[in-house]
Amino acid sequence: MIDYSNDISSSNAILIDAWGQAYQAIRLLNIIVEHSDEVDGFDTKPYLSTSKILRALIYLDMMQHWGDVPFITSMDNRVSRTNKDEVMNALLKDINESIPYLYEDPVHNQTIVSQDLANALVGLIHLEQKDYNGAASYFSKIIDETYTISFENSIYSDINNKEAVFTLLFPEDGNYQPSQIFCQFLKKGTLHPIYRNTSILFHYAETLNGLNRNLELLNVLNQIRVAGSMNPLQELPSNPKYEIADLWKQFIGQDYGYFALLKRLGIAVELLEIQSYQQLYPIPYQEFSLNPNMTQNPSY
Image (tube, rainbow, N blue to C red):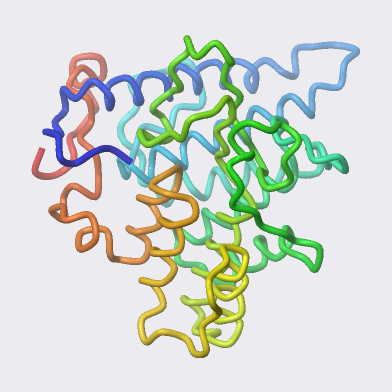
């Protein structure tokens, strides 16, 4: 999420950097995907699958911030902005085909692309599409009777923490500035969790809210509140989406996923005090000279 107290335009340096780094990563992942079948005598499926999952993660993040984006899967960069539903359906196909070849980690290695990450991505794509039953089925694959959440700051420094599902690892010397692809409001530490148990439980709460499964939603919200040393609710608030958003901000912060959460709940304009058009970022200005098929988001 970007700071809207500053002027947001197509020349914003943070957005230019985020867009550029996203497509630089996508280009590298495309090379792996495109040429993986050219390697003889070596099982490339785990690497192919990992590349497709990472590519899906980046594309989903970009669509959450820019809406329709060019869906580039080859070396051709002059692609028009692709309808996000078309992109999401392609990502679902990629992820579901990749899941059997992904690492199922019994010792919980949060820096490796795992089946839990893939299931979380599929669930979130269904959530973005308002397919709440589909989302719930994938989040339920991760959430079970042994599922625990933690709000300890060790998630940003302890590689052995059990809260993170997938984490970016930054050098301890602090010289490397993390990519703005994901979030401006990074908390200090060498680890930056992209997907974590708590955020997945919040996403599950969203699906329960969308399905009006109120008793289950109350139980999930109270699980979060009790873990955060808050008193449990005796009854569900009349508008649970504000409780979901408030608890996310309190326990995760304005970190990766908060902006998209507010937009899905339909309260981003109200809580962030922004204009409706600002729910999408402007396309960086240089893209219009690099790609003649590019179009700008409304009102920028």
